[in-house]
Image 1: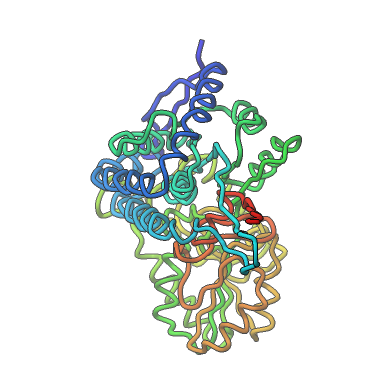
Image 2 (image 1 turned 135 degrees about the horizontal axis):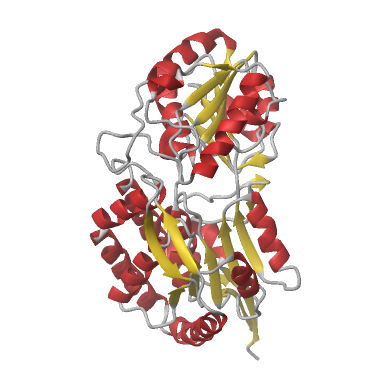
Length: 462
């Protein structure tokens, strides 16, 4: 009897989706279809592939209202914010399609009499994409569209929290006329996913998720030489200097910490503020957070929804309570958020001051609606604290001094460095992390290098 995937909506605890998990024979058949379809897809040529992918993006965007509503019910993002994921999907997909001819062009070597020499970008074959639930379209599109553009076939494993995302991809590709087998999705458990990664037919694995999940991917590939891109966790810091535009810093950093109920790998989880503006900053920050409306995310007026699962909310509560017991001071009266309830996915936002780096809340990924704020006396102190982390996905500085921003950025261990911005992916730039935030790269021209392999042509002409 087939195992059943159940998606429990965090809105009301109801079963929103049920799907059977794939059987072993179905997994094997999908891989065989992908291997066969990839050869013809590659032979179709780049121009034909890009035309089909552009049509798929059109088809996907046309269903934006339904996609947004499904996303809200699957993982709890407010309906007022869910359409933004479709807009972000379109921005990234169209950018990667636009730059594909240049990114995939042959690289000519310097002229040499009697020889023709160049490097060609070759597809891996089958790319296995494992997507998370928190931004299921925005993370998976980073690999799916460029992988297909480069001539690979793709098999997608969606999160069990957001399974309908895979079906939306498939529907858009079908409307665009992609050949059968070029894109497929499978509902799998962890053991099945590991088994598929261990198969010689999979040429590359693109994983977004936890550090533990990244280690599981490496373990599954331990006996093979297939590549893997790993986008893992974050404990992303912000540094507010004394010369910052405080109004802009407060507004943007509140959104950066609490958008999607803090469930973002590149969300703001810790803030360091120059001591001369520290009090003004936390007063304004707390005032804005208190204006949030926590409740049913299907209601237009709500801008803070539940976390995806009650167990995730409980983990955030534990970290927060530990910090308070160790001396941290909470700035938010959680009683002002009546929708919050112990043991439920609904959790009030929180700001903690008087925190230290001895507390887990300032060192370990929290992935929820709480942020710690510390005063600092200098740039050097801020740099040391920002680097005092096992993660390095993004970091930001808030200042009017561009020279200082670049100098500080040179010293911070991070994949992306922002000035006066946070929690954003620019598709023209490489999306990458250091330390426990993973390895590899998506987006930009550099992202195509991960989804292809170089093949050198050395031709003697006489």
